[in-house]
Image (tube, rainbow over all chains, first blue to last red; front, side):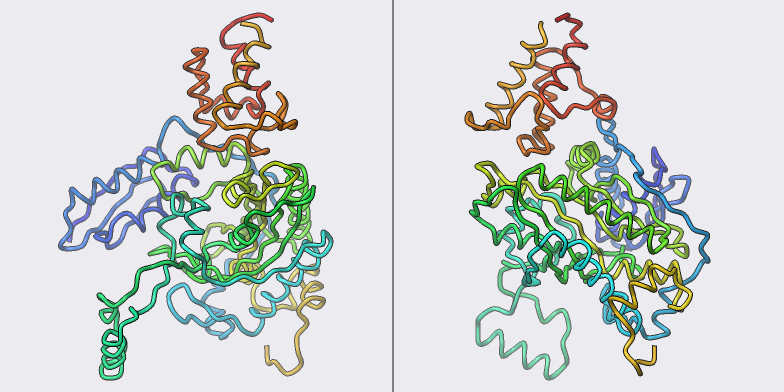
Length: 398
Length: 87
């Protein structure tokens, strides 16, 4: 087993977090890696790894994030700080059995965690969706790869797509699989040469079905609003930790499709409501300009443009125990990307779209991390909303 | 070169390259070309290349942060300043 080290040209938080995330996808020959606060990246390789080859891959990856032609505009729109205790919510939630780990990046929520999830959803429906007459829609959890292709998802985030397949339609393949499973139990090798071609993936985002299902629509001005919740999947390799980053998670979204002025003003109003929410619950957070973790060689141009246009803003909640913040909600403006992709028009022109998303499990985890597991000690605004949207049932033993 | 000539040149480039309908009445010199979906991130790079080739003006990343360059008029104003012409 060998190790090599690289001294990175920068060590700011933005750059370091991008590198940390991307390194998980650099090479299967990387056993582990560590990035120090002073910007030294040490990479440990498997015994059979070709160090030169891996080094080239890592260098190529790092080059994406250091393109000198582009910069990342930083704007913090809102910041609210609290003096919070350092509390390992993840361990406590597992011990209390309000969270159960059922596979890497897969969690079950129950008890107070379940109620908090329910509260979040009800609050979004009541305060964001209902006042603007948003239609509530329900989507499948899987999506055609052809649809993801049209959204340009594969050219931005190929690394995190969880593809779906099934056993080949062949009686011998099916019988052999079944016999092997009966005799020796299931194991990954049973899928070698037995799977059909891939045409589906698990939805990586909640709103793609919205645009897909509006293919060819001619909307009346100003447009429409939709809300939905989808069980989304993102493969995260070694980045899966606690509930900060899951492979399977629920995404509640409010989506606007229509004329640019309608979409922009709706997004602005949702931003305002989100900040009011953060104030009411006294959350330690920032609301800031952000970019997606584009995992392609054109990262720099995409990320820089996204930041320049303030196309993405994130509400980041601090997790004191992990000494970092996580993005729990994002406000996204897509311009006419999806209007063009799915021929949706309003007033004779390609419709624009925007969405606001709530990563439900992340919200739950962040609230427990900041305020602990004793609901009676939570901030008044949060307790009031819990009583209103997710009151405790008698005899639940929470 | 006069500002109105620069505006016309950039406007024509965007209309042709990004296939803006001639009947689109919202495509004015002051419309936000990104928010309204006329141009995306890769289109922005094409505009920067066009400005460099046509006017010899380099728009840097720093410019993108410092100046509002979201409308035909805003882009043309920066070009006019850089080429040193007077109206």
